[in-house]
Length: 205
Image (cartoon, rainbow, N blue to C red; front, side):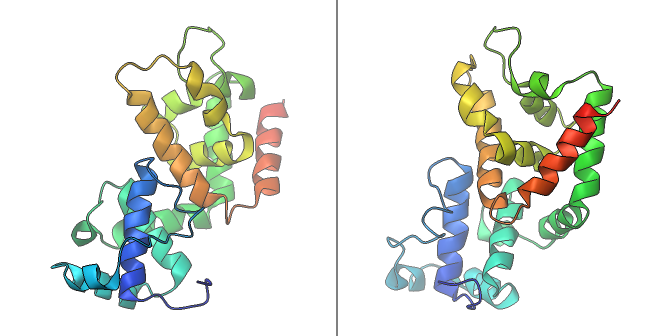
């Protein structure tokens, strides 16, 4: 399916389901183009909530827009199609539209708190702690957007999370969410621009 095609209700079901599994760390939805062959037309017609996907296909018939609608809602905790609404998409669009400015401001805030670029991504104590950027995201000081941009640029999660002591899987949950968002985000992210902003912020006097 190309991004210029209008999605069908069945495809909306595929997309919404694949994105939920994607953020649960159970599927690389991007790799499989948000398709789930096991979800058949017959099974769709038997669903009591199929009208929700029919409505989704009408309101967000553009493929990319539907992806972001579902992704923004899942990130907001709305995993069931009946709970999804427009507000998370509006908020995500607002961040994306002012991305360069917001990313730079969050980077500056981290510098002002005494962080270096390396200290954000590495456990300098070698005590099995999660990267400080992930800690900053988990505490609400840094947005998932900024954490995902840095993940796109550095792939720090794949490199650092195997070193983290995480008996309750708390940090795995946070890192999975950031990694999942970054995987979708990187398809449209202009990485040279974001890299330039990070370099400017962390090397300025």
